[in-house]
Structure formats: C-alpha cells, structure tokens
Amino acid sequence: MNYQLLQERIENLKRRPDANQRVIDALYKWLLKSDVGQRERLNPCQVARDCFMDLSQTVTACLQGVKQGIFDLNWDIRCPHCDMVCGENHDLSQAAGVGGCPMCNIEFETDFSQRVEVTFSLSQDIEQSPTNATCAPPAALKPKFQMAVSQGETNYAVDYLNPGKYRYCCAITLAKGIMVVEGAPTDKLQEIKLTQLQSGDFDTKQITCAPGKIKIELTNSSESLSGLYLHEDELPSELTPEQLPPRVSGLQIIHLPAYQRLFGDQVLSERERIKISSVTVMFTDITGSTSMYEKLGDVKAYNIVRDHFEILFGAIEHHGGTVLKTIGDAVMASFISSEAAIKAAVNALNDFQDYNQNRPEDEQVKVKIGIHRGSTVLVNLNNRLDYFGSTVNKAARIQGVSQSWEISLSEEVYNQEVLVTALKASGKWSVTKHEVDLKGIEGKQAVYSLGFYAKAY
Image (tube, rainbow, N blue to C red):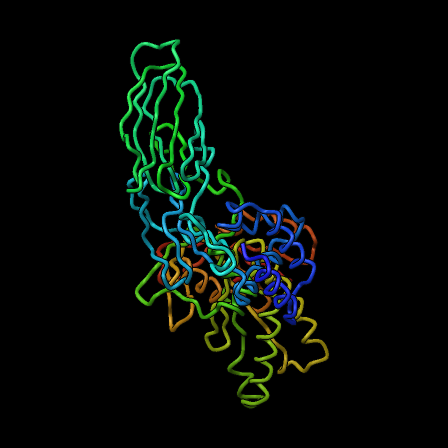
C-alpha cells in the first residue's frame, strides 16, 4: 500500500466543506489496521460496526472518498444461491438485469435490493488488488472448511465426510470440482492432493473416496492467491438477506442524499431494466392548485408551490427517502421501508400545518398522499433513475382517491406497519377503511386513510 498517497488524499478529503472529521479519522485508522482481504471489498457495514459509527455517515465518507481518489466504487452482483460475486461494475451504467454464476452454472434475474451490493476498494494507485473479487461462503451452504493459499505455498484441511456428493471450489480463480463420498466407511486417513493451475482450474476435477476422515491438500503453483472450500453439492434455495452478513444494497445507496449529490448522474443504460423485489412508493399532490393559480396569479402561486416542494423534499430526505421526480405539483418518492414513508408523510403534513398558520385560506397548501409497497423495475428515464410497473401505478391511483390532509395506504402497507397502530392510539389521527375502484386495477381495492378527521368517499 502507498501509505503516503493514502494519507495525502485523506487530508484532502478532510478539507471538503461537507467532511465529517470524526468519521474520516475513524475510517483512516480502520484502513491502516485492516488486512488486504477486508480492503479488497470494503463493506461499509463492517467499518461502521468496528468503529461504532452511523452507517449512513460511513457510506457518505466513502462516497466522498471516491471523489477524492481514495476509493473505487463497486456495484457487485451476487449469486442468489452461493453468494459469489458474479459481476463487478464501477459505474451503474454497466449493471445488467440478468446475471450468471459460473460456480453454480445458473442464470438469474438481478435484484437491485438483494443481489446488488455496493462496496469500495482502494484506488489502484494506492493499492493494487492482486485477485478477483472474493467472498466467503455463507453459512447456508454449510461449508465443511475453507482455506487460502498464496502462490508457491501449500495448505491443508482435515475433516470427516459422510456419504454424499460435495463440491470443492475456489471463489478467487473459479476452479471447481466434484467429490463423491460413497461405499463402506474407513478408519484410515484418506489423503487427497490438489494443485491450482495457471489455467484457473484444479488439476483434478473429480474425486471419489470412502466415508471417513480425509485430508485435502492444496498447492498453489501459479496464481497470486488461491483458495478452497468444500460444501454439499446441493444448492440451497435463494438466500435471504437474514442469512447473509449485513451489507449495503444498491437500493439503499441510491436513497442516500450523498449519493444523489455526488453520483446522481450515474444511471442504467437506456435499454436495461433491473428488478427491485420490494420498495415503498409515495405519490403526493396539492389539492386545489388550479384554483390557487387562478385566484393568486401565476407568480404568487408558483412561489407557494416552490415552498411546498421545499417542505416535502426536506421531510422525504430526513426519513431516508429519495425524490424520483415531480409531475406538475405532484411528487413521486421512494423509501426502503413503509415505516419511513409514513413518518415522512406525517412529518410533511405537520410542517404544512405550521406553514399554513396565519395564512389566508387561498394561500394555504393542502396535500394528499398515497403510499404502496411492492416490486418494481428500475429503469433509465430521461437520464434519471425511475421506477416502472404495477406498484408505481397503484401508488399513484391511491393518491388519486385520497383527499386533503389524508395519507392513504394500500393494504400491503397498512397490514405490515405497527406505526399505523401507534398513530391511531395517539388520538391525533383517525383511520378509515374504504373499498374503492382504482383505475386500471381489477376488482375493489382496500385503501386505509389516515386523517385528522374520518372521511368518506
């Protein structure tokens, strides 16, 4: 590592007007103490945990570090079954909606919220990474053992294997093979020798042995770093986030204000689409805005609308949301969780109440809000990230049937959020259920409206 260059760029980072000195100092100390494997794919969740720091502040410092030439930003595509890094991109425009895992020999649909991980690597002029992207096997694979072997060295592992079919592989070189354990058990130690070849393969791709104790020895004859782990050949069903180490997803990072400020120009290619398995979408609109323009005139009404945007954007950002676009007076935003979306909506309505105090009726802002959660597709629309799909349509339709001072929720949001119950218990909000027709959506839909007074359609 070029320690002098790292120190120089850290000092430059600390001179930024938006720099958090405490977080940057902690990040620098972590880098100095870390090993090359940790730095190769820096996980902000690990850094935040090790340094007792806020995750969003840690990610923000890393994003700023990319701009200062300290880090490279990585969009890593991970296999849903073995969690291997199957694709590495340094710009979102390179990301694809379909991925493939060479270890599992499968093709899969990329999920921006679960299979795209954002990591950071030190810039190549500070430290050159000698290997491909690596990853430790998740516990769900039930690995029997794992080891790393530097070039020219040999390492081994000893374990007892029951009858079955196993896979041995290296996530660095992509070498792999199959081991079949069958026949009568033996008390004799069985010794197996493997060699990592320069071609990227092991010298032996098929091994048969008896149930019992085995010693597997790996010699790395050519690669700068090789490894080996052994697990049962049967792939688990798709891994859930709870089965994996904490990590920053692609969906999480695009909701960070720092990312929007620093990398908001990074978008997908025009023809690419990436699935998001679950996200909360909010639509808002001003009620009576046409009448306000007619009564107040364009200039005065426009200034009030701008005030409305400022209040709304502030509430959305404060609660971890991101504004996707405005459509006239309407706003479309998204959130990682429905709880955050409800909190932002409540925050905004309280702020609008304060704004309206001592203002004539014609100059008051009255807003209605609709919130829905579901799967969407991430797209590039007019060189901006946007969502497409039925979840977006339903959120917009729910906002359409809402009324002034109401936050209308889909059944999917209402059923999963205890926050609604807490608001109800506060006595400040009423909750009314309606069965309504939503344009373009078949059948009656349940909509739950939170308001200061119970309202009926």
